[in-house]
Every structure is written in C-alpha cells, then in structure tokens.
Length: 259
Ligand SMILES: NC(=O)c1ccc[n+]([C@@H]2O[C@H](COP(=O)([O-])OP(=O)(O)OC[C@H]3O[C@@H](n4cnc5c(N)ncnc54)[C@H](OP(=O)(O)O)[C@@H]3O)[C@@H](O)[C@H]2O)c1
Image (cartoon, rainbow, N blue to C red; front, side, top):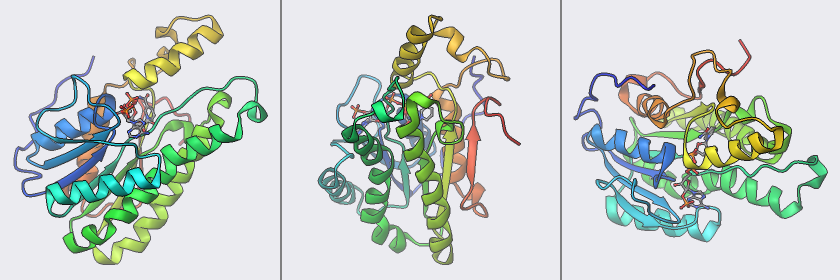
C-alpha cells in the first residue's frame, strides 16, 4: 500500500510551466497531479481524456507517435503556456509479442520506436527553443522502463526503444548542461496502471498464473503506485535536484537485479 508522504510544497513549482505527455491516466495522471499540487501550470496530452485526467491541467488531445501530432501539440502547448520550463515525456506503451524477435512485424518495431522513443526526441526538439529561453532551472524528465535494462523477450522492441531513450537522455544532458537545462530519466518497474495491467494480464494468461503473481517477487513487497513514479519525476524536475543531470533513476521496489 502506498503510504502518503508529507504534502508537497504548494509553491515548489510556482511560476513553472509544464508539458506532460500521456497524462490522461496511470503514471502520467499522477505526474500531472503532483506538479499541479506543487503549484505548476500544466498542459497535458493523450489521444483521449478519461475520468481520472486531472481537472487542473489543460488537456490537448493528440497523438505523439507522429511528427505532425507532436508539432501540433508543441504549438498548442506554447500557445496556452506562453513558454515552457518543464517537459515530462511520459507517454508510451508496450505490446507483448510471443514467438520470438522475428515474429514481430516490421510495422510493430516502427510503432514501438515512434511512440516510445522518437516521440520524445521530436517533442523535446520542438520545445527546445522555449526551454532555452526559460534557461537555468529548466528541466526535461523522460520516463523509460526496466524493460530497457532486463528486457523480457516478448517486449524486445519496446525494451530497445526504452533503452534508446536512456542513451538519448544521457547525451542530451551533456549538450544542455552549459545552458543550465537538466535532463533526467526515471525508469519504473512494475507499476499498477491500466496500460501495464493489460500487458501483465497477457503474460499471466500465457504463463497460466494469476495477475498478482506477475508482481509477486518485488523485494519491497508490493507493485508500484503511480505516485511512486510521480514523486521521483517531481524531485528530478525541481530545484532540489539542481546538481543532478544525465541520471537514470530506477524506481522499482528493488526488483531490477543489478548493483
Ligand atoms: N506501469 C508500468 O508498470 C510501467 C513500467 C515501466 C515503464 N512504464 C512507462 O510509463 C509510462 C506511462 O505508462 P502507464 O503504465 O501509465 O500506461 P497507461 O496507463 O497506458 O498510460 C499511458 C498514457 O500514454 C498515452 N498514450 C499512449 N499512446 C499515445 C499516443 N500514441 N499519443 C499520445 N498519448 C498516448 C495514453 O493515453 P491514450 O491511450 O488515450 O493516448 C495514456 O495517457 C509509459 O511510457 C510506460 O512505457 C510503465
């Protein structure tokens, strides 16, 4: 069970203008709410709004898996916000393919890269002039996945796209450090969300186990809550992390087996 920590400082992000992708539900909705609770002005986006999309944010419907969709979103967000200080690239999705790497159709590889990797490159590029204008204190946080580090075979295409994202974040951090723009990655493990629950159900069905068993081996004793990831994102986006850039923060309850 997620234990609610102290209330966020309601002024921490005061005056900060944030764009968060995939904020209609799941981890993205928790990130949007956490930034709003810290006083940020937030624009968020997804293809469809849901009843858990935070009310306090401006919602722009759109598809970030195409260059045109990303450009439309960037222009609309800048229109609403008049600039941008924080970008959280969270939208993403995995689709499991059993049967081996060569059973995954080419279009599926391209879709995985478009949504989970190129969407981030494209949106960050589109917002970079505004981030440069914002200057010192601006931050980009990208949401990867432990599938980048310990890729399940059925998610080889998704894992590769998320691994590219970690590499991209590291390189971009070095490039932007001289102008004071920080770039970080948050890498979640198993977090309970609508999208991830659907994938885990596929794995559970294929393995003949229950859905709960797919998250039964997490050292800290429970799967993640979207707020666990939102806290990590908020920290890295904030001035509390002003001397951190290029980092990849794994938030997985201890599940990822590495030092
Ligand atoms: N939950 C986990 O266990 C877990 C673990 C590791 C990494 N992650 C990563 O965490 C991020 C959030 O995942 P989640 O678990 O919260 O998933 P989710 O519940 O499926 O939410 C995904 C969000 O992204 C949006 N999205 C998906 N495709 C999109 C598209 N083409 N254009 C615009 N928006 C799109 C969705 O809205 P629409 O579908 O309406 O567009 C939704 O708002 C993803 O990058 C995921 O890869 C999650």
